[in-house]
Length: 195
Image (cartoon, rainbow, N blue to C red; front, side, top):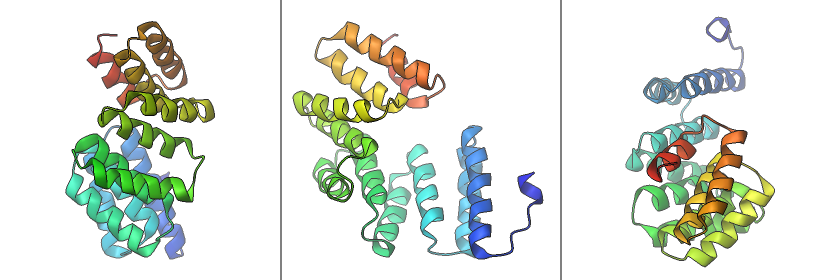
């Protein structure tokens, strides 16, 4: 049981915090996960894994300012962390209209990891939010070809729908649902389009 583990090193301590945080996040308790990560970062400041995890939770909670602070701190600690650039870029693209900043961040992430499906997904989603449907489809198709992830399927399906390819969108969403039926982004997208 996770609560009974007594970590001996700081690295073990971080792993225990991350495991407990993941359990809370997976059981739809992001506020409790955030509280745990806040405490963890008081105890172990500047830990990159804890900062990244807290950034994911604050993005989930639409706390853009806190998310941005953590991701920028992580980028300062690890200037080649493609996932930090991507997380911040995606959050800015998805939850704000700061598209130029998002574009620079996601471009940097793609320079560092050009074939990462989640970074390709972020660029595709940003292109969609900016109204560039053709570019969005290109990036999202590349992403889904590399990883049949439910969130990527949600994004690709939405762009397909908006281009008029509704049958293809439904198929893409169905495939995503088969991969991960509980994915919150996919569930929200299906609800948004009455599917």
